[in-house]
Length: 230
Image (tube, rainbow, N blue to C red):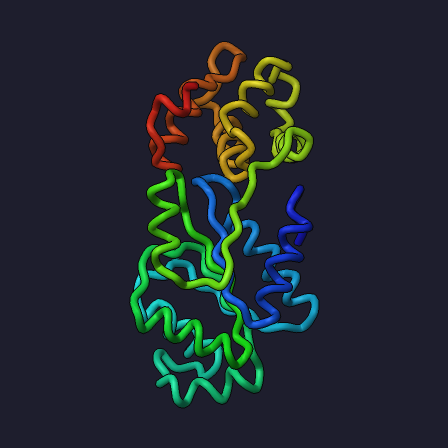
């Protein structure tokens, strides 16, 4: 799998994880963290390395359940029985969203890391306060902010996701406005283009960008309506 504009970041993340490190990657909603993890997963698969995906990490069970199923096919395997499996075939843990953790989760990630289990943990941080909270969990050896994509990469994503019908109807000004709303966040751009593929977001042959952006902010990204309209 290839995602636009993230090759160097994918290489950095997988290199740390293969070394048994835990890395926290963070960014605002729509920055494309899950797509980034998809690409890391594909990279690991290509080199024959196991990965274990966790959609949400908010408890000890969220960590141990997926590891147990991946290694023993059991709903839960005690750590002492799980460790030899991990040591023989260390995986990379891929967490789509870190929400909470405790001392036990922190300890297991570190102790499993000592026997080769790397981790790439994605966290949502729209504000400095959310970023500070993620740091306070102390789950990772290193943290990396996912940067906004540059204009060229965003243009390429826009072109790739334009529906045939809308491609001829979006003016240059419309395209600029779509990119301004997305603000370097590929996930937001893709979601917005999916919305613009629906007839309800077109009126009299023109895209209803205000409506689409507001609906996206409220229903999909949870950001204030004013942000979507800016």
